[in-house]
Length: 272
Image (cartoon, rainbow, N blue to C red; front, side, top):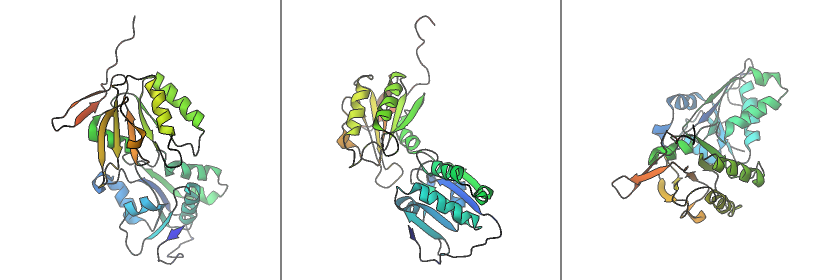
């Protein structure tokens, strides 16, 4: 755990419970952060989170303390945040995107559920939403999430790969648009390729696939390809992959790019 040079004791009050807000920064651009999130950050005494996201949330005043850590310390961060809040402090736990989508709101809820400390339940707890990576990527390219869709993380850190494949299979059979989080990493370079092969068994080769990397940040890159042409080496951990349904369409936007959308209608089943 890393903290700023401010005194750890700070201005702690033990006479009452404080506030703990779990916030979503959105995709990274300041203008896409909810005003209520910015206000919560401005009022915070302690900012807790993964180092990269804490840096995105700044800059902070000298009187504000940052407590940042590695990305795999979610439960430790959640417990630390409650301990600080029970001391009467205003604490913010930072997530990118939306805190309830593969992010810190779940860890905070789990920590509270598992705790036997009654003081934790007296904390003023709030979850403030943000624009998710799937929403930000979709908005850049049109409306690929315009009909029923699902989001699936390809990370097997917390669930087995067999379960991920099962969910992909059912999502493909149900003809959902599928947004893939955590699609690939150095530790698991083969999984995205296996996932794409599964989807190719259920979707047409021309199915649009959207790749959005660092959407809302300076290095943003969004491209449209097809299920037949997409390659794992086009994707990294910071890329959102959106695989269209049988209805998803793409058409020229006049600048050599493409718009992608999924109509809100669906063909009637035979005999209906």
